[in-house]
Image 1 (cartoon, rainbow, N blue to C red):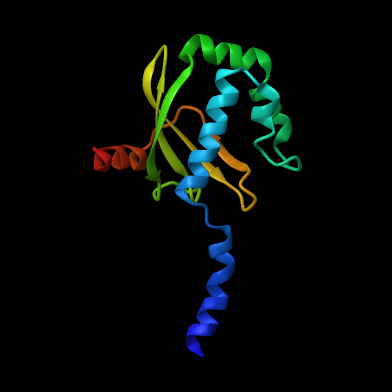
Image 2: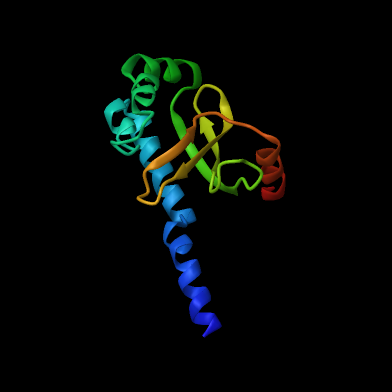
Length: 137
């Protein structure tokens, strides 16, 4: 009986857990949209009812993406590193990314229960990310 009760208590959290595959799929979609300068598609990676959608639209407009391409270049590759457990945002997946102009950087993202972006950090670093990168080598 205890096991059944425990299962029902944990079931909702399991339903919202995102997998490595989910994060890699989101990063793959971002790479495609970013490299093709598809700003609207990038914006549509967030839920339509996100309270901060206006800010996202301003951050990912045509001029902003052109500027990112000039500064960083095309996104050539990404590699899943892991979840940054030190970050205050639970489920923040970290990727080692490689850009044509600046080389290797890190990018992180988290997904909501419907697999829309909830957090996206184009270029990011932290002590937690540094630790993940060291353990990955």
